[in-house]
Length: 190
Ligand SMILES: [Mg+2]
Image (cartoon, rainbow, N blue to C red; front, side, top):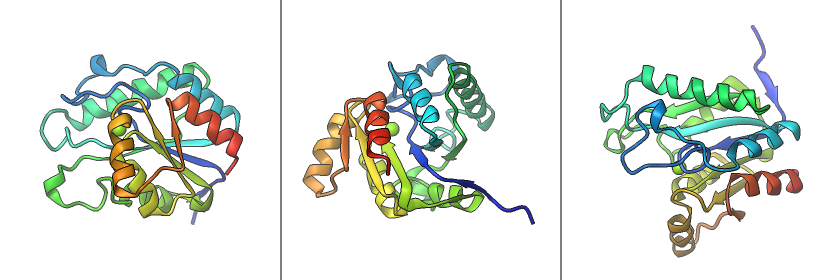
């Protein structure tokens, strides 16, 4: 049997509000997908520093009937190609297509997507970091057992920062954006 590939330093990244601009109306087409300033640069720096980046994203728009799986794959292909053209790399993407009412095991804050990644790759969560703009991302990192959780102030970040403080669920670092988060991660060298 083929042994799973060993990833030594992993950064799990939320997508909407971290890599690209989020929308209350969901991202339903490639036309609606817009990189946030600095996010591509951040991905290039992470790659140069030897990190494997895995995207972990809730995409309930799929089961809400707002986008097809083909449409979602299309967005992800363009996203990966654009990042790669600039010298970055997304190693893999795990998404949850379910609506909150479906009670699945993969919708963040549940750790299902991270655990799935750990089935397919050998990942030491003691050296893994999750970055997101939502309280769900920070809770997901804790639920999965990631070493560090970073909140970015893009997307829903400002609202989430307040919610986390109120719930006693603070992130290890609050970054202005993904670029700042990448610099912190590289310097922290978890
Ligand atoms: Mg988000």
